[in-house]
Image (spheres, rainbow, N blue to C red):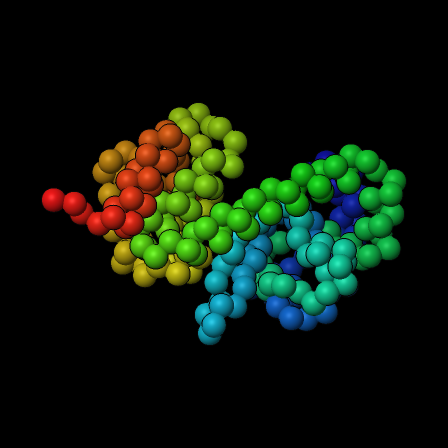
Length: 217
């Protein structure tokens, strides 16, 4: 950790254990958070089921919308690991934005990325085929991910996919097995490597067309 990060933590930081609920959907919000270390699940209740929307890691921020629009929390935030977080109140947030064009620009870019991710989630929910949902999710995450040796890295563990996508665990496992055998993804404990995003995109289009038109003899 750099000296600047440590100074920020000394001034605004707090430590939270794994499982700590930082805020709940529907509660009033008066703080935003920046993750120095650890991971945080962001989840939303759909019907009677709490669905994980995303998992954020080091350098990510969340909770800013309640400061920007003074509305209740739109989701629930829970520590997926032990976390060190910078906790920022509205006055500090406004001072940071006014005093640093770089911070403001970074936030605008991040919010634009999140809007695109929200659009992708809506598109995913409209897919009625569970297999297509799994492939669509991996495809969109890979498209947003920076390149790494061997392809694009998706840092979402397989165990989180059923809750995120509303697809039964058995079906998720079956789809991932097919993708691995076709060498479209390489899975490990922390997530997936997509060697060729274009090939995965072609496979998704195949599934989408199959769901739309069925098997034509």
